[in-house]
Image (cartoon, rainbow, N blue to C red; front, top):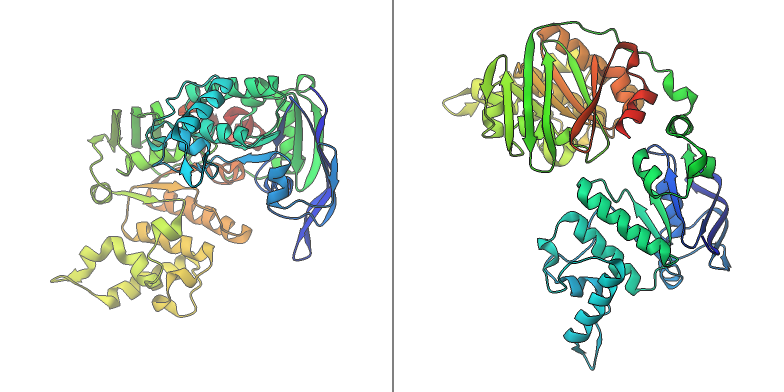
Length: 494
């Protein structure tokens, strides 16, 4: 490691009078990888956005390669060699590799692009990274990992000295992850400093020189990677208070409702076998990209199955379409309820009844009175708050009330298997507890099997009878009873 590239001192940030960063220090040297860890909401994104010039700090100082500043803007950050590499792709998929590497700075003169010069320089950059990708290939035809490497290559054309990589492996296969790490090794040897944000602790052991942990806007640990183990990292990330959640009483049943036998889907997940019994709530826990949500999508016919079998109450089920899955007694709620789960401009009664319109209709016309009765029945049972009753547009409800309506949709349809992806994302604390209680009560009373895909360990602790932990497309651990706790979940998923 070489000279200091970045020194952030006593960085504070407030929004509307509420402080979210409480005097954080951060240092990065040339040729160093600093792993920046912390759970969602810890302050990682805010801190690196300040470094990249996207937002100003409320107070504190920034020193970049010897230049001390009170704040940065995006232009200054770029001039000083700071680049962000996000997990979401930010390329031009219809352009070539060379065109993407020099995006916004194509070489030439007099308005004429020098294509040969651009391809030659692009090849030099790829050679520097030891990456073998044809410079004339169309970016959109490449794998996700290769397209991320293009973004790194583009940063190097702009004299990058500091790279911030935000969850770069979330959507990558194991082969692509290894390739990325090889490139990072090359960059280290060339003096580039990197801040690496991840939830995956096995990656920290592979790439990091030092580790810094944020929790609730505070820096709680900064240490050499060689001087700490996984257990200590997990404890620093979670804090003691995170382990005090009370477990629900487990439901013990033995009649299988949903069985997956060696289920696979391309690169998303492979050879997954699990069983969910009647009346049981099973949580698939893993970080985004681990395969949890993709499994539920396959069962509901939203993602192709390339191997294995699905059984519903002992009967083989072949996913054909979401409508066919619903007919088979399977319900599904996506993580993005507003864009993918509800009809925002339609009433709450219509949103609740949509899966039952067939049985509510006469000669093709839906009986609105029947819709209203269904809504009123579930509004009372689930404590749904709607100012205008059944006629209010669902988009005007709070997140928690919207989710209750969508749950009631499948309860009204009397499904026997319910698939939920991130069921309390964007829901406040009070409504979360309501939703957990609703799901568990309905599962028990109607013998409904519930399979939940979630990246929220507290959700698993408060909701699951059993937890299956996933990483890189495979189930790596099963937890039951008192072993379903925050530390075990986070450690296993890493």
